[in-house]
Length: 142
Image 1 (cartoon, rainbow, N blue to C red):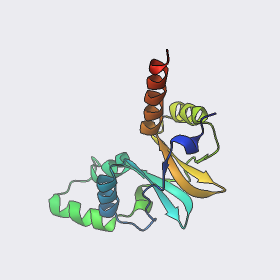
Image 2 (image 1 turned 30 degrees about the vertical axis):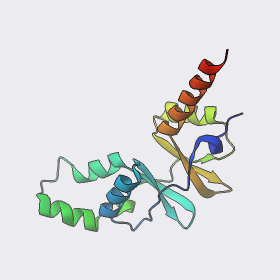
Image 3 (image 1 turned 180 degrees about the horizontal axis):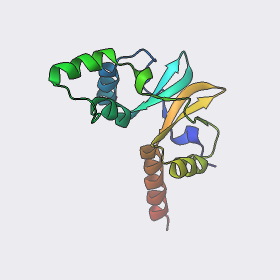
Image 4 (image 1 turned 90 degrees about the vertical axis):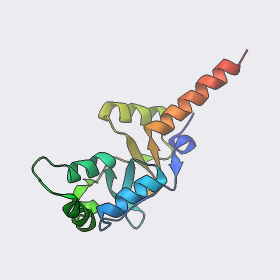
């Protein structure tokens, strides 16, 4: 059985609740990721996505200029934008179950835990990469 641990991204980028949005955005850019677990130590307390950041910055109720954007990015924290207590998945869970959950709930990722401690993140990209590998293996068989 293929498990979440087999296809997840280990040691994902993380932020704390007090991380400013500017830093969250920089981390997402440098690590080429769209979802970042928010942690307290090694415990997942939230998740912040690129969509969360865009919504915070582009609210139709807030009229602001570039200078105000910079101030907002420096003062608003991950805690203000994150989804609290996100669904997590155990590393030993089947990859199939992870895909089912992500499909059912329309999640782009799930933080992966082992005994309650963050050990990775599984994303739609991880699942697609695994699927592509499976198709290539089948195509290579006689």
